Length: 101
Image 1 (cartoon, rainbow, N blue to C red):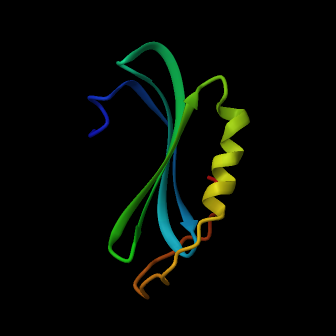
Image 2: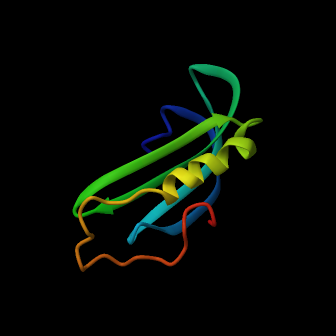
């Protein structure tokens, strides 16, 4: 609900646990409009991951009409993420990779 003041008409289209280079991440996808851009249908994906007690957030958003064409680029970028430090042993990684959610 932190995004609610910034976004109007947010519709969650998908939520999944994914693996980001050995870390369990949360991927959220949805459609929305921004109050600052009335009538602009947007679509996006948000990937959140806690790596060694630090929160990382990756955001991909575009015009809804362009989403299907551009989403594979975001997926490839997320699949190319490599941590400079190894995850702490307590990490619970999923077996799903970004883009397959």
